Image (cartoon, rainbow, N blue to C red; front, side, top):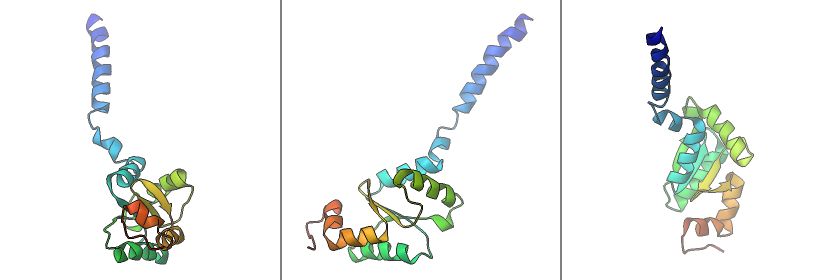
Length: 131
């Protein structure tokens, strides 16, 4: 009986240790992926390969000679989950969703407007403001 009582705390300890054995598992969650993508890259675009609005946003950065980190949601198994995280984060379920230096710029029209009025260049830290 004493051996059985001693085994219970050991079993609980092992369960707790094993549950924490893979700390990288948390970073694989869609929410952690989105946060990491936004804050680890100067420019992040959540996109879909076939979306003309996404193509427009990517073209703006290409014209600015910028190299954004692009997440093509339609090519990822967790794309729908990532899109749900974006809905919670920015209140939109559409693509593209553009982030510059951790700040949400918006979708295609928002990005084009920010480019036209020089706000995008300011966010990027470029001195050439096109006003």
